[in-house]
Length: 231
Image 1: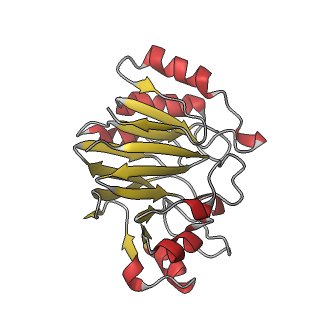
Image 2: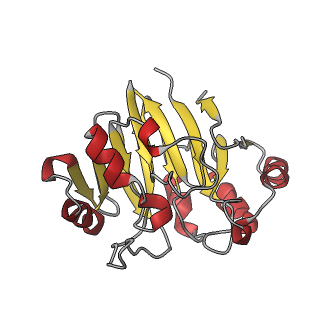
């Protein structure tokens, strides 16, 4: 079954995998790029990379309404339970650990960033996400700096790499290009840019440079709301 991807804007993503809807880092209400409202999405699973408001803002509301299972690190899961989510509705993982969920295997990876929760409490270690499903390998870098160990994640090939390019809060265009060179993914989608002036970037210029310098990687720049089907 084909995997469908939709870019909501900033660092919020939706996948349709094996008949299940997977929502990553729900940020709708105060997301100036989002064309979709929080009450319009109906995920089966929600994956969280870290606790910053622009990655977790609408998680509790969506999870309570849809009964979606929420997957995140232990500190975030404990915080979500304190907000009223049940133990049965949450699933804690940690860096390097994988688990077979209803749509595919999820492993949390390293990410070099910070992670506090909206109330200022400790959010544990930030993470990237590796999804293995439908014979595809998807790597969502999350909010992170460039680090050389990224290249370890290409051992089984990377079919889709979602990478921040905004700079200031995450890696910028130069480091994102270096990340693509380390991974040599088949398909690349930039994210975490143009939400606010501090992270304004020209994704088309970046995409053209990537395709000139990384011969086997194709970049797709999606406007918020844009969709694609993984080849």
